[in-house]
Amino acid sequence: MKTVNIHEAKTNFSSLLAKLAAGSETIVICRNGHPVADLVPHRRANRLKMHPTLSNVEINYDPTEPLSAEEWPHLLPI
Image 1: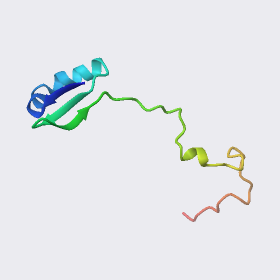
Image 2 (image 1 turned 30 degrees about the vertical axis):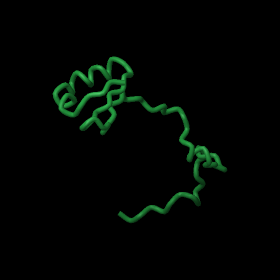
Image 3 (image 1 turned 180 degrees about the vertical axis):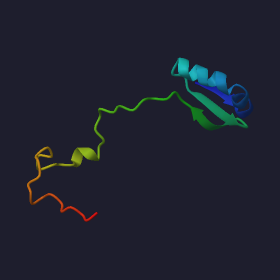
Image 4 (image 1 turned 120 degrees about the vertical axis):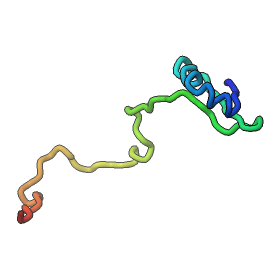
C-alpha cells in the first residue's frame, strides 16, 4: 500500500493509474497526513453468482409455457 498526498496524486494521477493497472497495489491519498481516499484496482463483478435477495424468489410455474387464448390481453384500439 502506497501513501501519497493530494498534490502528488493530482500531479502524478496518470502514473498512479498505471501502477493500479499493472498490479493490485492500493494507493491511499492523504490530506495533512490523514487518509482521505483509497485508489484501488477495479474488480469485475462475478455475473454468474446469484444475488442473495434473488435466491429467495421461487417460481411455481413454467415461464416458457405458452399462454392460453384466455390469458392473452385484448388488443387495444389503435
